[in-house]
Amino acid sequence: MVKNYFLKMFAGIAFLGLLASCNTTADPIESVPNPDGGPPPQKVLTKVSVNNVSQEEYFTTADVLDQAVFKDNSLNAGNANYTATLTYINTTTNPKIKKEISKVKFVSSASSSLKYDFDITPDGNGKIYNATLIATGATPGVSYLSDYTFTYEATTGKLSKILEKRKEGGISAYNKFIEYAFTYTGENIIQAVCSKGILDINGNPNMTTATKSKYSFQNYDSQKSPFSTLPKTYFLMLSLIDPINFYKACPNNPTSMFIEIPTKPSVNTAQSYSYDNQGYPAVEKNQNVSFTYKTL
Picture 1 (cartoon, rainbow, N blue to C red):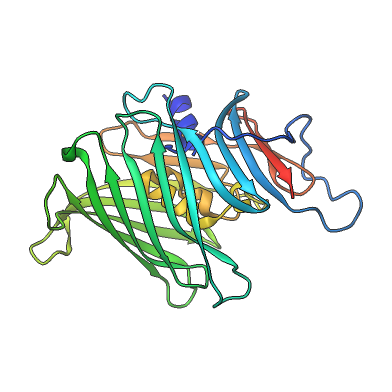
Picture 2 (picture 1 turned 45 degrees about the vertical axis):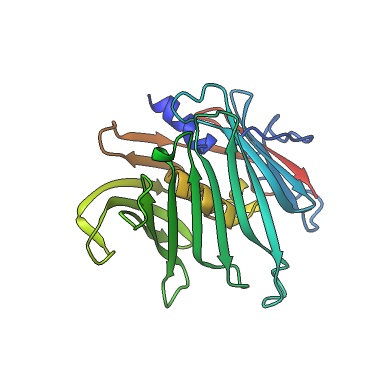
């Protein structure tokens, strides 16, 4: 059970079975300095594999993520994959940010799985304050519409909360909510608490109706996350589908995870990495997860 759950963790829900032409996982190096002493070449993650079987694949043009593919772990999905397609807009507010993600669409090859269409409102400085989602199922009864509000800490600027208000079952008014609350160590999310419940008569979350799941990402290393080579906004959208992916929006790598979900057994896993000469994980040794990159 732990093994299967961890595979889902790295697969996301679902992003992914990605291709790459450059495999850095053979004879991984334990954080060896750059041999020539010069600045290391920029790289981007292209594939995450478990036991040499691709689980996530990322397709980029230069350093821009165009598509991602990952395992669909939905019930009755079989061997289906999700494909995520990203749309960008140009911004001029911040000269360091040339493009920001405005849409992400997740479509599965399994007809029974939900299709997710996110419409994002970026602020020109790399932050999101609002987003909407149309989730389309095989029948109207399983489809829903969501609106998201993102809240940031006033002093640190860190994302502290995401509130989702949802219209389910063809109802025209909001009737459900999901709140994600974050705790940090440094820039890394160490816990995401997911509260699901019913909105009150005024459209506010009624926390007395909420059930809570906790996703704890613990004991981060000081090395670079492979997912930090890809857009943070993408992983936030992915995490709104499956919160187990929130650690992918962090700059470093957790070395243990503890997942508590109502009605399911708790899962506690440990991660141990080998790194390449730029400080990125090449292999997670406990679960035999390998990371493949391409040099830009």
